[in-house]
Length: 233
Image (tube, rainbow, N blue to C red):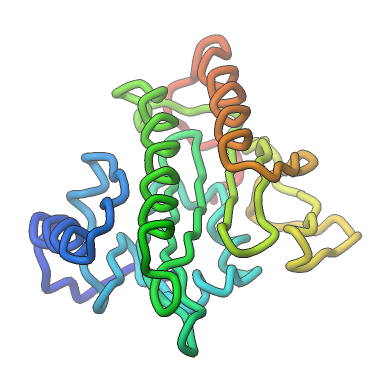
């Protein structure tokens, strides 16, 4: 992910364009915090983001992309994309970093997956995310939290888990993300320590438990003012 330096689309146009595109396809648009709407741009057809992104890396749930998404250096981010291959292998992806929350979700959509069941599944997913976002205070971006909640889910891959990052740690262990890759040695990086992944099969169960964990993070006494947490040079 790299910063975009040639943004020819206004933020208002980008968000409105995304909503219009989703509505035209008969799909509920994803929830986007207001402050991130102002930073969105349309990178290409069916791809809106706040930083340049490879839509196919999102579709493939590429390990490097997923690790970068969870980096504590990335404190504010949004990407929505539709990508895939063949006649029936397409996904609609949403990645969001906002306050003490990191979310990646993927729904089957396109090709053979364009009927009412796919549309219903997308609506349910975005409803769960809306409920999670409503737990966050309005000034969440001006606060520093020592932990972050990471929620990962895919409707057609073995990916349904959440974990908690300790953003004060610089050395972390790379955990296997549902078979995407694993290294046993601790590595020094600019990323946060990640506790053991909690695997869940039901999307409802995943977001219900994730909401409870997020409440605990928010209720920690009290969040510190935004400052350099030690891993920014």
